[in-house]
Image 1: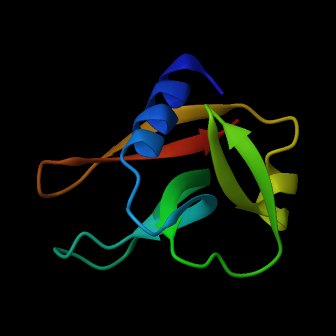
Image 2: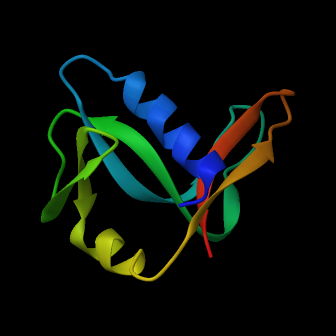
Image 3: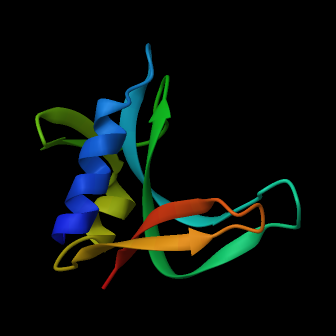
Length: 101
């Protein structure tokens, strides 16, 4: 993980949601409410929060927090570097994802 990606992950883990567990998942796209779904280019990952993560998970410590990662996602991350990727939204805001290289 490059330094920008690490800073982003730390900030997402600090903004924890009560009663939910942090999960590192593959991201495929998003809907911003103004258009149809926009699909990401490349292989992307995101930190989200789930009450009960579904499926077989590995649990790893990231920056002092236990994070659930689906086994398939865990294997996809092997020997990869995560970089922060910023996607401008039509609303003028930005969405951040972790791009695998």
